[in-house]
Amino acid sequence: MKLHEYQARDLLARYGVPVTGGGVAATAAEARRIAEEIGGKVVVKAQVFVGGRGKAGGVKLASTPDEAEAAAGQILGMDIKGLTVEKVLVAEAITYQKEIYVSAILDRSTKRVMMIASSEGGVEIEEVARTNPNAIIKIPAHPQLGLMDYQARQLAFAIGLTDGKQARQFTQIATALYRAFVESDASLVEINPLVIREDGNLQALDSKILLDDSGLIRHPDLEALRDASDEPEAEQRAREAGLTFIKLDGDIGCMVNGAGLAMATMDVIKLYGGEPANFLDIGGGANKDKVKAALQIILGDPNVKAVLFNIFGGITRVDEVAKGIVAALEEVQTNVPMVARLVGTNEEAGRAILAQSTLIPAATLGEGAQKAVAAARGQV
Image (cartoon, rainbow, N blue to C red):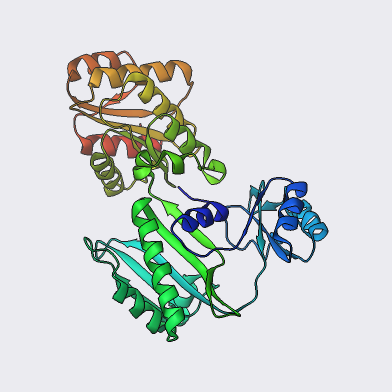
């Protein structure tokens, strides 16, 4: 789950990270009021989940409340890379000496939280990695002890913050960023740029936070911040139905119970020359309503030319899945061929239910994948 810039700013502020003052506005009049409260130059920034806002005209400077109101009026409602701007952040405009970069990210190769810093902030870190990899410093936090102060100081010194005051400030910011990462179950917390102001103090100018959806059950306050404007409709519907769904580029829809079995199913489809259209895990104990919702989501993809059901009934009852499939087919008219491999709890009852349908039976996953690939090619 992504947070908007203003939401990320507010979250980091809770941990003591120095951020820019200001507020978020949904109307030009609100933007004017915030600018009046700031009492100086402001920057008006579109709040959408895309990069390149400045180049698209979504970031404007304003010297007066009148200018802030006019800038907000121009930005609100603007289309930036397919997303409509509904809110703007009105923040104090500051002058600074230098931009730097700092982030915490989950590094799966080391199985640790990796702290990353660079003396080159304000640009995409991927571009820095490509053009000047030596400018990127990485230090893994200890899995039990966390980020130690001496590690944060190492990062500060490595990116040129040799002044004692700045090194101490950076240490405080880096450790606060690490705490925000861990305590909010994030997958990325980034400040870019972290600037050195004219007075020598450090301040976060822009921030980005990605949260792990699996951890949101522990954070209802963060879940409430969700803005699904950039999520595909199918993924929104899947989340509401309690399904794990990711759209892919293939043409064979997959409905499977269990993430591991779903991965194996996609692998076997590819083994036989096909391409999966999605990852969809209906989970354990799925009832017919859940299965029905899953099938409707799969068939909502116009690229799907065949569907493969691969259900192993442990907690999930095969007959319940079969009822869900039949119920969905009664409501969704489709000519898409479907292959079903159903084994496990109540499988005989489930197969009896599906025997009255047009589904193509398969005894094994391999057989099911081959039949699905053939069906997608019009060979069945």
